[in-house]
Length: 240
Image 1 (cartoon, rainbow, N blue to C red):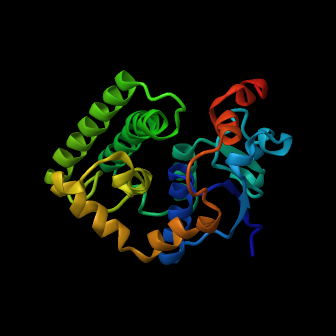
Image 2 (image 1 turned 135 degrees about the horizontal axis):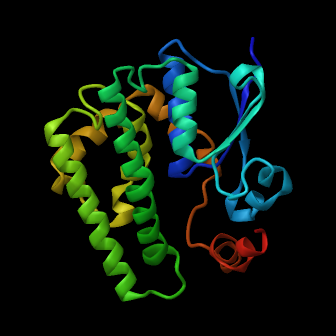
């Protein structure tokens, strides 16, 4: 049996992407052995030297594949790159073989990486975590969250999934950011095509297992001042 891939992660939307993909590969009969290495970001574990040796950006997730290309160990960070790598390593149809469909999947993957993730994250920061509630920032990112939902709803009115008729890494990347919509004060009922898509993905057994990885370790309740300093304050800049 090949040596397991180490998945350095935490139960956030970006972590969930990788957990879900690895579980989907198992259900496809293309499973890649993996072991989870928890990185408790609220405690500052993302600044540990052993993690920074994998990713200079001190953000989860990151992986170490002991049997990378050519049998050479590979360290990889950025969740989108990890999804592409693992799907290709497993020769999974989750990254389409047809060139046109493949690029459509990559297009929507990049839409998540460059739009949905950063904008939803900024909303979450200013609306839920920032010590000072800035009306301009909250309104700006509220509007952007709504706009991105409209873009997704239009696409999903045309297609069962983001890349076309079949589920792909684009859907896996986007779903964790759409779930728990109430945390962004979003009513998915206003976006019926997104709601249909969300519910279909949420019902998948691999998705249920993926979002359960490390779920018992998720932070509950209001962020403490110490956690806020670790996540958003001077601590992170000192590690650069």
